[in-house]
Length: 361
Image 1 (cartoon, rainbow, N blue to C red):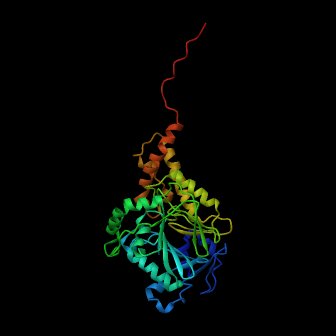
Image 2 (cartoon, rainbow, N blue to C red):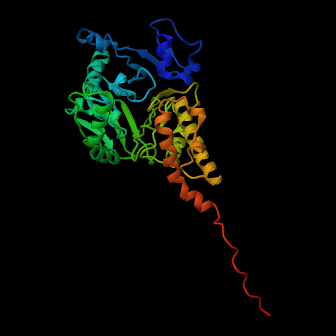
Image 3 (cartoon, helix red, strand yellow):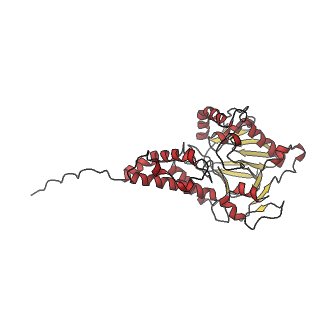
């Protein structure tokens, strides 16, 4: 694994973990928490059936049976990336694979399926959708024959309501060719917070969910490996999307996720803890943005501003993040609407002093 590949997967904030720890070529990478990372480590399995494109997909094994394919760059949806901006991951047990968030299109889902078979020898039998955003779930089109497509009730409902418009919008942004053959395939099986999803030797715990990034972010915890799937709740280098979410709900969810002390997290970014007990950088980065957003809105309200005073709602420290120009202004408006009632309850209403009670002799 070369340094550029490491940078792309872990992100700049987590690269510090690896300094001085890169093993010789072909030996993989040892991360401070003991997570072994292998690129294409299973390529020898069924290699004869691999074509060059399948063998080139940069699947990385981040824990026993846990595989991740990350986008090549931190970016927003565009024609250049065909909508592939969120990691795809898989739990592999023997010859059976469970894919989590299969990506933005039929073509991408087909590549997920064939490259996993090429590199791990496993066929995809089931899919999990963590939240109802097009770049995560439209890859379901490649898995209409799966034994199960799992999601929370809220996610399934949102997909049924919004996916037709999302499919049209995504095709406009990335081009019709990239979305060729893509159709909406809805979840078939419901997940409920508190239950366990068993996949061979893997036991995923379904965590309680707040309205954070969307109205139903599925969070999955794999305690045996210390890995966490956080829906769309953890970003790094890219401005979070608050369209269907809640600042306070999102922060509450992040606090609970941090308390788990995960070794690694898969969300809008893939992030690992630098050492045992540390917090993966993506959880801290997302929390930092949301706290700064909340504090900036509160300060603007205290200053007597209105939500139209956009100059008071900027966050220059995050202006270099992907999507800042496109999403931060909307996030500020959404946060204002959410926080305004709490601010009004906190601040006493100005007005004339009430009349004194008449004195009694």
